[in-house]
Structures are given as C-alpha cells and as structure tokens.
Length: 56
Image (cartoon, rainbow, N blue to C red; front, side, top):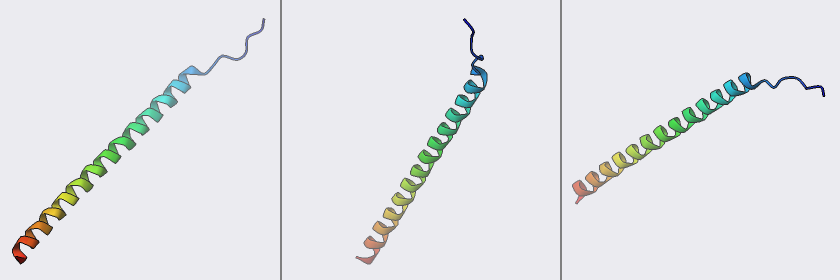
C-alpha cells in the first residue's frame, strides 16, 4: 500500500509553540492592563475621599 506524503510535524510544532507564546503574551498584557486600571481607580477613589473630607 502506498503511503501519502509525510506529515510536516516539525513546522506544526513550531507554529503551535509560537501561537502559545502569543496567547500567553496577550494574557499577560490583559492582566497588566487590569492591574493598572485597578490602581488608577483606587487612586481616584482615594482622592475623591480626601476632597470630600476637606469639604466638610
């Protein structure tokens, strides 16, 4: 029985590796962005509380 062409597992593995690296990078960026936003919101709330206490 004749075999078909060999499967290109080397390039497929490299491609998967690159895609996984890209996904991990995007997840890290998303987490960093969320942390920055969280810190900014906390800072703004703190300033708001200080201004309210000064107004009283």
